Amino acid sequence: MNIPLVDLKRQYDSIREEIDSAMSEVISKSAFVGGPFVESFERSFASFCGVKHCIGVGNGTDALFIALKCLGIGVGDEVIVPANSFIATSESVTLTGAKVVFVDINPETYTMDPAKLEDYLKKRFSKGTSARRHGSTATRPSAVIPVHLYGQPADMDPMIETARRYGLKVIEDAAQAHGALYKDRRIGSMGDIACFSFYPGKNLGAYGDGGAIVTDNHELAVKMRMFANHGRKDKYDHEVEGVNSRLDGLQGAILSVKLKHLPGWLEKRRRNAHLYNELLKGSDVTPPVEISDAKAVYHLYVVRTRKELRHILQDYLKRKGIATGIHYPIALPNLKAYARLKHTQTDFPEATQASEEILSLPMFAELEPEEIGYITQQIRNFQGEGS
Image (cartoon, rainbow, N blue to C red):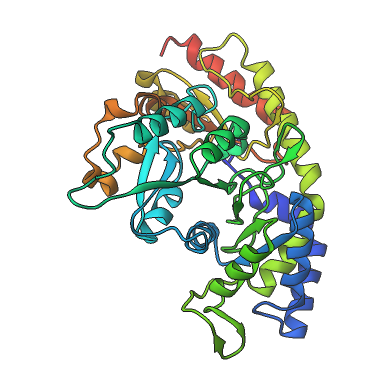
């Protein structure tokens, strides 16, 4: 067999006529930037998320940056992010001029540990704790960005309660969790703002870059839409300096088609994850864990193995025609990009250890049970060879 990590062609083939028709309609109407196709998708996606407003933007990183800027985050602020995520989560903070602060993860779910968030804020606000960091620059914790990583919902209730108690804004990074549920609430509906990516490989992916910001706050929605469109409400009436980050018409039309299929695709991903879980029982790899009262959507299926075996297993599976990935091989605080913060690997032991042990197996809605059976059998064969 030859099994890719994700197969976008299989998905396209299953909806080819709908996609081609939607793209043809956009082109025939020359509705390339903004316009009715984007507006229609924004309404549908807001409804899907259970919120009032959706603003289509250029990509998921822009979504985070715009959300932070429109919450007033900038120089003098601290924004807390998990130590395990894609760099877009943290770099969007730095782009605003704010200071990024990392908090370690729950080793089972790989998302931000609510207890460690509480510990950091308690220490940060304790009597006698100086607000000074990095020389003379005074900073204050102002926001937290929980990441719903790999399609697994972060444990939102305790983090929101902690954030509110300390006066922090909450921005959900939902770039990998379209459609996931937390205690019967849709991901994207719990924080002050939530941000999504529509990168092609996502559960809801465009045919190029794309992103969205969702919120129930009307004032914030107006502000973010204006900021994302050069700071203007009307064509040449610029109230502020903004940025150019807009979802284009072709992507809006494509996403509208795909959104209708998304619930079915998510159930297939969950079916595939449950089959993986069953077939990996008793093996040397640890399957992913869902927190109670959550419904994960498995953007990635991330298992865990021993550090000394991971690359050997990865090479073995490659020889058997099975693609794998590592998401992510270096914990955020350990990247060269954050050397200025002078962290050591022992500062975030859970994220560091996870980065050395995690392995992503093929996961997409069209993955067949026979393929999952083949993958899991090869993992068992690897163990049987004593590698």
